[in-house]
View (cartoon, rainbow, N blue to C red):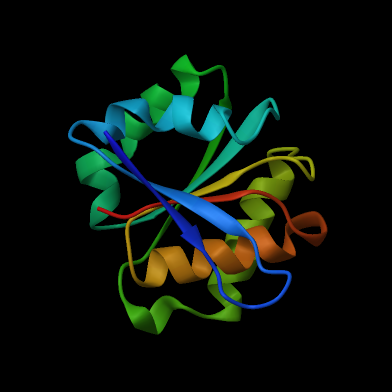
Length: 133
């Protein structure tokens, strides 16, 4: 595994680690657990990535002790809408998340953008982990 620490240049900006490793999907749970101790976890993916990797990542998160609340959005940039954001927020809120609940984006592009926005707005903002595929 290789970890790269990214330091943002703006005053008061924060740093974050980027992990790159073979087989990393099977260790997502332990990576998320290292930054978020909440009992539940939101997992957002799309209709293309979900069938390929959702169950594998969900199993990793459950092995790390999370109760996983999943939401699969339609694939494509055209689904980055407030309606889709609302649907994901509804799923997470019905799942009884709390402010410390991490939101994990499984996939890149539109999934990461949308899930990041959800994490930033869910209960005034919480942890966000991006798992690009």
